[in-house]
Amino acid sequence: MNLKLITDIAKSLLLARFRQSLVAAIGVTFSITMFIALLGFMNGLNDLLDGLILNRTPHIRLFNEIKPTENQPVNLSKDFKNGHNFIQSIKSSGGKLEIYNNAAILEAIKSDPRVRGVAPKINAPVLYNSGTIDITGVVSGIDVMAESELFFFNDYVRTGNPIDLKNVSNSIVLGKGLAEKLLAEVGDVVQVTTSKGERLPLKVVGFFQSGIADLDKIQSFASIVTAQKLLGVPSNYITDIQVKLHDLTLAPAVTKEYAQLFQCDAEDIQTANSQFETGSFVRTLISYVVGIVLLIVAGFGIYNILNMMIYEKMDTIAILKATGFSGSDVRKIFLGIALTIGLVGGALGLLFGFLLSIGIDQIPFNTAALPTITTYPVNYSPKFYIIGIVFSIITTWLAGFFPARKASRIDPVIIIRGK
Figure 1 (cartoon, rainbow, N blue to C red):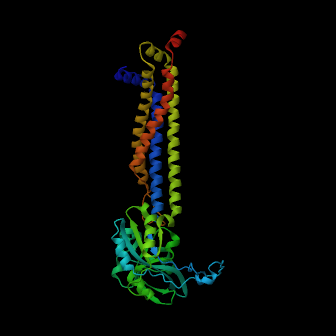
Figure 2 (figure 1 turned 60 degrees about the vertical axis):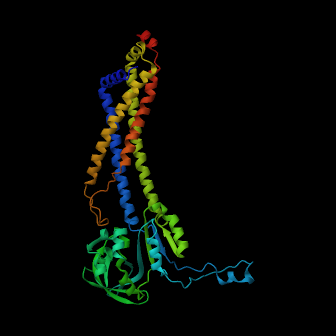
Figure 3 (figure 1 turned 180 degrees about the vertical axis):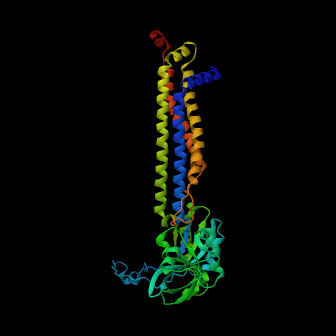
């Protein structure tokens, strides 16, 4: 049968039940709107929460861990080769935290095409001296430029200029919580003592606020040179090498490769922060489930409306089939009605979902715990919109398929005889 004729008939039936069709379209629109807004907001929240840790965490960390020697002398003795040796209270070996030959390692990593960037670091446990009180904490010696490029260090320094760590000798950036404990202001001098008893006065040039309160109460930053001076070690002393890759998923494999190649301990970001990946997955899964349930509910609305339309239009369907329309033609008419409702409702849902996301993105959100955030986070990924429109079409097609098949099987003789 002529496609234009089928289209005109579907349009007439749709307009004849305009109010019911409009209600069905509004249901699809509401579902898609909430689907887009919910996924955008939840994934924006995921990006925010993960960013608090993941943006500050290297994809690969190289370090030396002090641990007991795996092969004790008794295991190496030929006299006890075939026996079971029970060794208790094993003490750690006399290893050092320093990464040996770190200059060559840094050059080798920088030349790796998989690597986006590398930043050396020194972690030093210290005591911050406040009168007669000593506060335990950690001073991280960093390359300010590399740390800012790879780990967004600039974004978390809320007071002062981070480049002052490089330009001002014997300077330090304190965590916000730590500065409050020490009653320190920018320009003050704080006394820092290492575990070996070395004490060094450091000038406060800024405050750091990561959004993790417990970290900000113990963490501070200095230049690598200042950290080496604090520890009384030579200028080639490094305890950590932080690596960022172009592709995060390569981290576990590259970590094993680097650990074997450079003969040091290595940890990948997936291992260090597995709990955050789990949390993100669960939140995203909940968002998708809620959104899909909304679309399914809208699909049932379309199904009910088409079923009622078939019962009310039995005479029309019978006349169509009696005048030469096949069951396939009737099925196309009702599928066309369902898909029209789905496409119109879906398109409007995408528009209103985008506008609602923009509205959420403009709502002020200011908290001391998240210093880099000023409004509620929203993710505008195109995949959400693609998933939304595709799923709306599939849902409405399925909602229209069964009523359309039922209409195509109506026997016109029975209907006309009953009249």
